[in-house]
Structures are given as C-alpha cells and as structure tokens.
Length: 350
Image 1 (cartoon, rainbow, N blue to C red):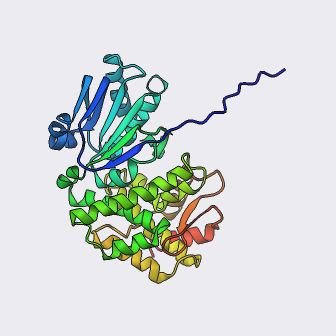
Image 2: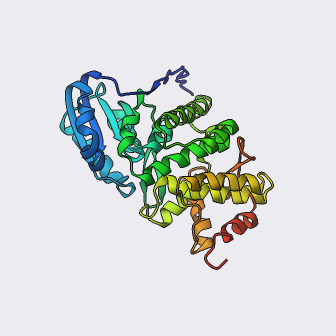
Image 3: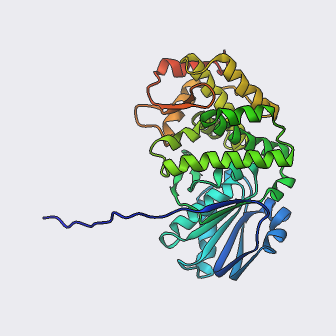
C-alpha cells in the first residue's frame, strides 16, 4: 500500500543585487537588524537612517569567526521569540560574511523559515558570501558544517561601507575575487593583474564582475550539486588551515589565498596548470599583501582533517583544481601519494 504525495513544483527564488548607494528601505512588518559590535560602532547610525519598519530591533553579536557558533544563533533566535516575530517578519544581515551566514541560518530555521536581506559591509561578503544563499555556522569539527541553503530576498552592496575597512579585510575580499577569476573568467583575471583595486571606481567594476560571475554559477547550480562546488577553489585547504589555527590567525580570505596556492601546487603536479600560471596567481595575491605560505606541522593530521569537508566522502577527498587560468575541474580521483606530496611541500621538515 502506498500513498503518493505530489510535491513537484517550481519555486522562484530570484532576487536582485543592487550595487550602489543604499536606498531608503521600508517594511510593513517587524524587522530585526543583526550586526556585530564593530560594524555597529562604525555604520549602524547611518544604516538606521535608511530603514523604517512597523517595529525595528537591533541584535548585536560579538565580532569574530570564533563567535560563528550555536551560542550566537541562540542569541538571534531568543530575540526573535522575545519580540514575537512571526513568519511575515524580516531579518537584515548587516555585517560581513560571519553575520550574513548566521543571520541567514537563523532566518532559515526560525518558525521553519522567514525572509532575510543581505547588506554586506566587507569586501569579502559583498563579492561572495552575501550572494547565493549559503548560510550556516561552525562547530568543533569544522567550518560551516551546520547550515542550510536559504536565499535572501535582496542584496544591497553599498561601497560606502568599505571606506572604513582595514587593509587585511580588504585583502581577504580580494582573495575571493581572484578565486572567481581563476576558476571561471580568464579575461577578468587579466583585468585584475592590470587593475589597481584601491581605486574606488575600478574596485566597483571588480565587485560587479565578481558578483556577475557568481550569480551565473548559482543560477546553474543553486544547491551545489555540480559546478557551484568550483567556487570552493582554495577552500578545501583553507578550511583545514582555519581549523588548525582555531580561526584566530588568519581571516577567511587569507586562508583561502593560501589554499589557492596549495591547490595550484597540486594542479601543477597533475599537469593541469603550468608553473608560470601558478606564479601569476601567487603574484596577484601577494600584490594585496595576502599570505601565500603556511607551515603544516603534522601532515597526517592535516590530511585527516580533509575528510570533515562537506564535499568529501568517507573514502575520497574532493579537490577543486584550476585547469590553467579561467577553467577548473572538480575531482575526487587524486591518489593519496599526490595529496601527501603536495602537503609535504608545506610540511615543517621539508
């Protein structure tokens, strides 16, 4: 005996990404702005002049990747319950990638899902984290291992917020821009080699191209069943680095920069990429003072940590490797000897 539940339907999760001065936003429902202590001091007063709502609350979290955890999620949820938010209410993520990921995740699980909007304030979150609907938090096993796909209703990218961005945070965002160029857009990579991204007009063009590139990929593969996984270039290695250093030594983009160099080392060994191309990527990263080296203290432990990555399985590790500049492959067919040889290049005793 069977009972069939026909649930096939088309869901339109489309939304607009606005790259310009933040417009006036009005909401006829309850709204909670989720931010952190750093962004709050710098920009909250300006931001609140731009929004009006039936009822408005601000939830301020501690600043830092180490606070991307269940305790922070509970802080958001507790505030929503205390102020009697319902399914028509709205969350606004006002901050960097950590705030965006946690706000989106909280929105995805509060009363089984409410709407949220991204207002990213760091370069990394503007070009990458705010676009595509990936939400989540970290736990003791690794980065973003708990989360959901939950698309925002809109994304507002206001370059004004970058005026107070520290240089390290700026560089971390550049790493994500370079990532998208290496994997999908050779012309964009060559533009970046020539460009001075410290020029606001040129930077805005780079943001636009990076967002367009990611939007095209997400449109093809929203839930990361295929080509979207290529956007994790550098992340397989980078997440292990973040885990080993307890998220305190490197910003996310910095760890990704090192991860790209490691992935390129493997790609060169596999004859996917020339040494000259790998050097071009490294030089571009170093142009913005990004780290490109890391000393692996325990190669076996580093290798074992790969298996906590969401893209890996019990018996194989998925790597995203460039095929030159402007193309990419996703493979779980790299033998252990090749992986260990790559890691040993960065090992303490090598």
